[in-house]
Length: 94
Image (cartoon, rainbow, N blue to C red; front, side):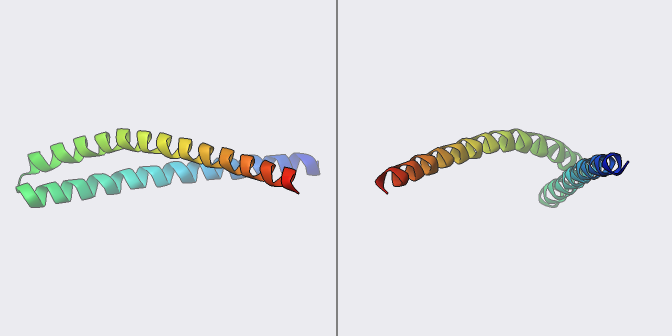
């Protein structure tokens, strides 16, 4: 019975974490839209231009973010490989 409760507790924590991440993502998207609209409206004085930019800019930014993350992931993998090689070389020297 205790094992079942522990497993159930882990499921609840994972679900809360996923919900928290999704809520954070949605709130960031709303904030990004609001900032993009505010800046575009302030510069143009037009609700239509502000709305168009607020829709297009976050969409393009999302694509850019995807490639940004891919580059950083490759960099991280390369750094880990370098550390493994350096550690292996240090072991053989000792």
